[in-house]
Length: 101
Image (cartoon, rainbow, N blue to C red; front, side, top):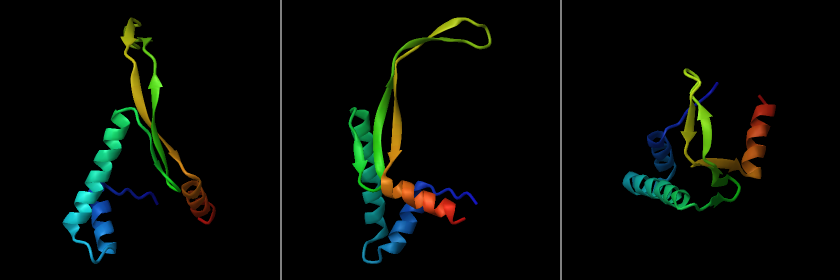
């Protein structure tokens, strides 16, 4: 069964596991971590969390695309796409869970 967890659920689960830390401190910490990761990627940096994975940007060149409706050529500007590469520990944990299901 597929489960989705959003940021507020993540924060509440984390604060439930940290009994000696207030909910607002956990909330501020999670938001600050996400803001730092966003800022680093926005400045063409790389974020590595050992055992979890790394975040980087894949750069795509400008190109000529095609409007499928009219067939007209359309310029597509260059862009950077965030990319996540899972770490070895995360890959193994996920594959072990899938294999044991």
